Structures are given as C-alpha cells and as structure tokens.
Image (tube, rainbow, N blue to C red):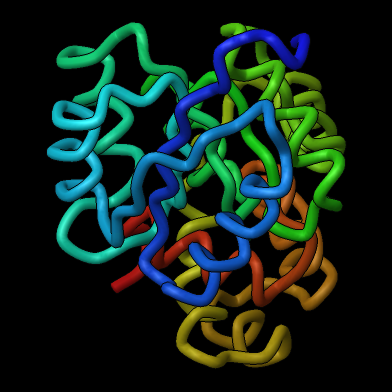
Length: 212
C-alpha cells in the first residue's frame, strides 16, 4: 500500500482495555492504518461496525456478552465486506476452527511481533488469509489425523475417570484392565482430541461437554 492510499479503517475488539491500548499504539504509528474505534465485546463491535464502517476488525475470541465467533458469524450476514483478523491467545481446535468457519479472514496469536501483526493486517484488509505458524501447524496436524475423531465408549470411560482425578492405576482397577491398556487408551484419546497430555485432554473434554 502506498502512502497516498486511503488508510485501512480499523476497529479493535478486545475485552481488556490494556490490550486495546497496546494495539492502538501499534497501529497509530503506521500511516497505513486509522483506528476508528474500540469495542469491549462482540455485541458492541456489531454496533460500531454499523456506525463506523471499518475495513478491518481486529477480533478477540473469548469476551463477555457476545464472543468473537458469534460476532464474526453475524458480521458475515450484516457486513460481509468487512474483513476480520482474529487476534487471540487461544490456539486450540475449539477456538481456531469455529472462527475460520464463521468467516474470519486471518488468525494470529497475541504473542506475534508488531511487524508481523501489521503485515497480517495489511494482507487481511485485502481479503487474503494469514495464519500464524502455530495455527498453520495445528490445522495441518488436524488434517493428518484420522477422520474418525469420535471417542469409543471405553475411551470415554477412561477420560471421565481421569477427569475426576483417577490415576492410571485407579482407572485400571475400576475398569478391570491393565495399566498398559489405560496408557494406550489415553494416547488414542490425545490423538482424537488434538491434545498433547492428560491436562489438555481433561480441559478439552470439559469444553466439548464430554465430561460434566
């Protein structure tokens, strides 16, 4: 974008004022962008998009009142020309995939350097996709995993016991199997849920409603 071009009109959406201040500072220093407003949740963002007509929305995902994915989905109906760059700390499948499916143009993590953020915003404003390396790897890993991500009844039994604090030995005793079998079940559970360890499996189980 040349210096003579009209600046990209930017709306910042995040429920943390200190984050919004930091983002505003990052973009204010570039003549390519004009920060036209800030919102603290998805509902406020929808109202401001209608009022301010931004070109690009920097959208957090987990916010009160209305989350980012819901806001992105509604923007797709009410303001389809507006591009959305998700900027969040969350990179789980449950965060990434719904945001992209809802219509997010790009997805970046908040630990990205300022230059990477500015570059991503430039590209996203043109309607082109940008994904952080961590997100790209996660999506590739998901594609490479077996399509059948459904847990078996025995895997659910193992997961529920683990979620309630049972050790591998206790799970084995409860289900009348060997500890080696429990470990095998856990490895399959990790693979299907797209997590790396026991804590990740438990967290994902609660998020998916597999465990209450």
